[in-house]
Amino acid sequence: MKIGIIGAGLSGLTAGRILARAGHDIVVFEKSRGYGGRMATRRIDSKSPASMDHGAPYLTGSADEFLVLLAELEENGLVTLWTDRFSHFTDDRILPEMPGREPGKYYAAPHGMNAIGKYLGRSLDIHFTEKVGGITHIGGSGPKKSPWMINSASINVFEADAVIIATPAIQAYGLISTAQDEFDLRKMITVLDDVSYSSVVSLMAGYGERNPVEWKAIHCDHPHISWICNETSKRDFSGDMNLVIHSTDQFAKEKIGTDDLSGTGSQLLRDASKILGPWAARPEWHQSHFWRYHIPRKSLDIPYLESENELAPIALIGDYFQGRSMEAAYMSGLRLGTDWAKKFS
Ligand SMILES: Cc1cc2nc3c(=O)[nH]c(=O)nc-3n(C[C@H](O)[C@H](O)[C@H](O)COP(=O)(O)OP(=O)(O)OC[C@H]3O[C@@H](n4cnc5c(N)ncnc54)[C@H](O)[C@@H]3O)c2cc1C
Image 1 (tube, rainbow, N blue to C red):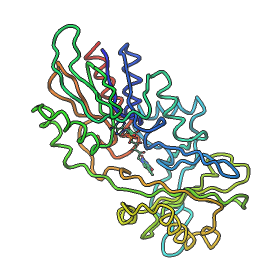
Image 2: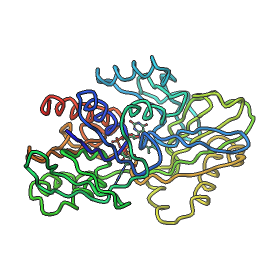
Image 3: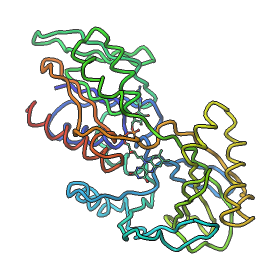
């Protein structure tokens, strides 16, 4: 079966990998230039080049299947155990750990989080910078005819026997709405109305050669900053100190649409200096990225959503199914991939 997958994030690549192994012909459409979606890493070409995880900073989880993935990634050198706890900034102090929180197992990616996407998608046919603008149901129950047309914004058209939409819920809603005449699809997406996301500004900052700090990352009780990550504790930057700072949802929502990412970054640096000390306000360089879709506020209590029309299979997967995390994204892709591999064998 020819299956078109929209989105090369963790959920889409996971489903694609399983279905390709089951013998299906998979084509992935990805609007950005790289693998991994929100498991993102940016290469900074400064005086001392650096790769910074400006999306999700680490992996953790408890489902057996997710632990199998972590073991596979560890065996291939793509993740290493990073820490069992994070520091906590509260009442103007940095505590070594969050009171009341049990130690966990947090894995960092020494080659960057996007290397995980690259690994999962290595045998898939992925079309990068190919934004899908819509999908059309063209019927086609004849032996040679595919029921779906995937329309990319660059006017390429791709025929598929089945479609998997592996994007955040709001983008999935937009894509499905383009196949307007489908009563079954309209019914399917009404459940997406409930899903919304927090937003975040992710600030990357490089401080050059500096004495290392002793913490790995800090959860912050602060009106503008939610998290500060010591990237240098994840991989070797030859003595340079690099941080990634995440804003709060409230701060990101206030800044949305201002188009002043540099000013927004400077403000976060001033805020960070109140937490870390005056040095934090003076990096050698900084860059910011605005994520409209950070983490779902609420998830749906099913592993994926699929149409009831078996002649034109279409399904939605992602982190908004049974969880609100990378683990949820993986499990959603895994469940759909496994079920479809059986159903369409
Ligand atoms: C800053 C940040 C911090 C985070 N921290 C954590 C954390 O600590 N713990 C945790 O568990 N999770 C965290 N997350 C969330 C985690 O990254 C996501 O839950 C997970 O990666 C989602 O995977 P996904 O496959 O569902 O979606 P995504 O990774 O969003 O993948 C969707 C893909 O679809 C593509 N796409 C969208 N629309 C189209 C279109 N029309 N055409 C083609 N392609 C399209 C996108 O470009 C993207 O690559 C964080 C996310 C961010 C941004």
